[in-house]
Length: 275
Image: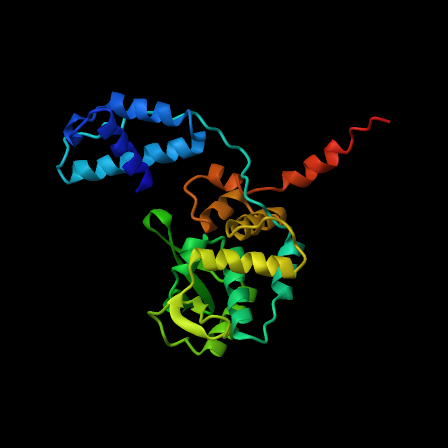
């Protein structure tokens, strides 16, 4: 919304009064100007937003063609992701440090385990309903609605299944199929509400749990997705399988989360001895 609003404000400022008057050269000029202020990934995101807006307008027969379709954004190549990644032990330390004598602790452990063991994005996790944790055969599965409208099902790791069952039993919500799975709390009362957690709620919880476990890294919600993928690959998992679990269209995207070479680089750089 902000990207499209900025583009349309720019069009108004330079004297382009109607949507029909916007041409590829105008979109290209706007993108070039953005490159003087914003980073390449942000500029590419703005271009994608404008392109999607006009795709929608073309489908609605409001404009005859998409003027942003042929415009190319700045070149930006990323081979290693910037998401902070934990070691398997650090992730286990966070999970073990959670006080599971409380309902909130049980919820937090179940939520983090869901992200780690299913490689799920936080948006998919907070959007889950109770019915999205369901049995298939002898095991339970997670049903995830990922970005881009992807419908994705992942088998549940036995530890995540154990912790999910304990959370649902204690919260007494197993039969509330159409309600949020991971719920917010009512102040500091420790009581769950009927509303689902937001991504910001999860982010605050993760930072709080990491500090309690003695981990001072600048973690984010995506950390547990990247950690799960890295640990999976480090234990002999195949890249193609990791991409399938993570619902990636390409293994190149999955490789951004693979941080196994970080330790190798650290060992090699110590070979530089000046004395």
